[in-house]
Image (spheres, rainbow, N blue to C red):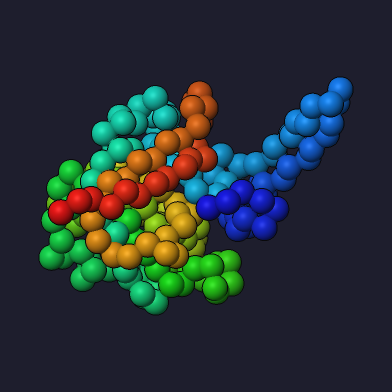
Length: 192
C-alpha cells in the first residue's frame, strides 16, 4: 500500500507525513509515521508482554508459498473459509471487499476460531487487506497468532490479485526492537 497523507491509519496511531526540503541542490525528506503505517508486519513484540521483534522472525515466514482466499463482503471471516484448505507451511492471505470502501472502523476481520484452526493446520504467516486481523476493540486474534509466532501482515493491497497460490516475498524495514515494520510485499504467480 502506498504511503501518503491519505494512507488509512488506526484512529489513535501516528499518520504518515512527509516533509521535503532542498539543501545545496539535494532533495531530502523527513518521514513521520507509525511502525504500523501502510503495509506492515506485526511482530510478537506488538503485544507488550513479548519481546520478539524483526530479528526473531525467520525469513522462512516472510518468503514462502501463499494462498490468497477471496472472503468477499464477509465482516467476520470464520473457519468456513479455511476448513477445506491445505495451509501447512504456507501464508494465508485474506482478500476482502470490506476495505477501503467502508468507513475506517468497519472492516473485515479474522475470527478467533478461524485463527485457532489456521494455526493448527500449520499456517506460518497471515495477511489481510484491512487495518487489523482483529475485530475493532479486540486483540484476541493477535494473541492467538503472535503467541504461536505467526507474523501478521496488515494493510495489504490485494485489489488486483486473484484467489490462488503464489510465492509471497515480504521484506520489512530492519528497525531494531520494533513492534511493527513497514514492508514491501510481493506475490509471484507459481508456475504449474
